[in-house]
Image (cartoon, rainbow, N blue to C red; front, side):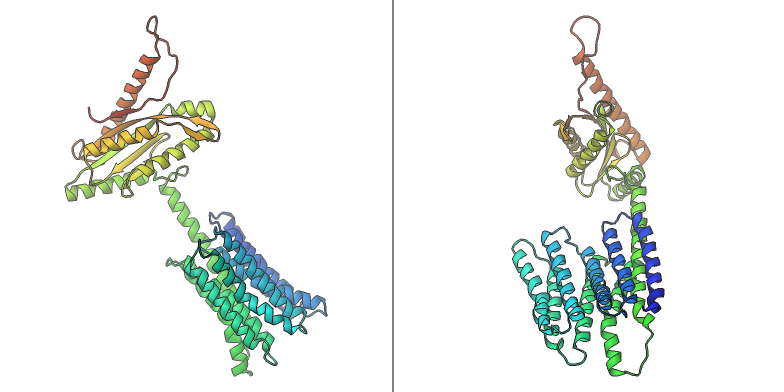
Length: 444
């Protein structure tokens, strides 16, 4: 047993535990894949502790150590692929996992069968290329072709050097691992090009990790008397681990910042962000001498929805309404959820009172058809109040008050009409039924 690798195992295990603790709170969909990759790295170090054992256990431990290292790099690469939902991407991962495992298994477990390395080397380039060409009519991405080019170059390199007398197997393994982690570096660079500390450290770490498999053989060949401590070659692994932890923390901070300014249910801007955007919109309107419209929309009888079909359906309804409203306005406008069942919309220039009225009417019409939500047919109406800056009010707060008063006036008018329709023609008024009615209040 090689207990000298125990400190490395403990260090990576501790970093993996730290990563797991951070990933547990992360909203990132790739954190689970990254964590699996670090489990593979822990297995890599654990296996090489048992590598000095006699055959077959020593050979098996060496194979597991090398294979788990390749698997970790491939998982890290897969996590950073921007088209991970593409069906052929899972096939590409399976092909590369199988090709790397097969090639490493032949070199480590059956070194006498060197003839088998030729077809195994061809698989590295031929199968990814074939899969890419098959998927080409419906899917094409430069990053996919980059991966195919790298593995085709690996295939050619292996065919040329894998049978080199003396160090052919070492050259082949170093080339395989260089390709795995250099591909990983390129994919991370593509996925995390934002200038953050976590992205820079992770990408630099992967580049250093890939470079180890080039620099170490070159030093051994050019300066055989040079002695480099083993910990130097393991340093890139720790750099990548720290970089990934920073990436997770940065994403959590960004998520928390998003939650502070957005409604958690609908994802729309909340009241705080809405007020900031309204103030900015009015300032731009002052400078340009243009108009800005504020629309306040309150859903009619939303409480009845919660009482009859439950709060879960009510939440789904709010999300659907938010999506409907967002799809109606321009990208330069703002749709916010500013209350329980209240939405606010800012229409910036170019806008007029007539255009704002049309938007308000269209929003009400969009709610006329019932929403189908998990087997329930739910229908709500809406009351809309519109105020125009600077005609109706000169400041954000007074503009909001004007729109709010008109919205409630429209709601009261709608309720009055519903009661009149529901009352019997003779006798005392009696509420028979209440149906959501649309209401629109434009001016006093």
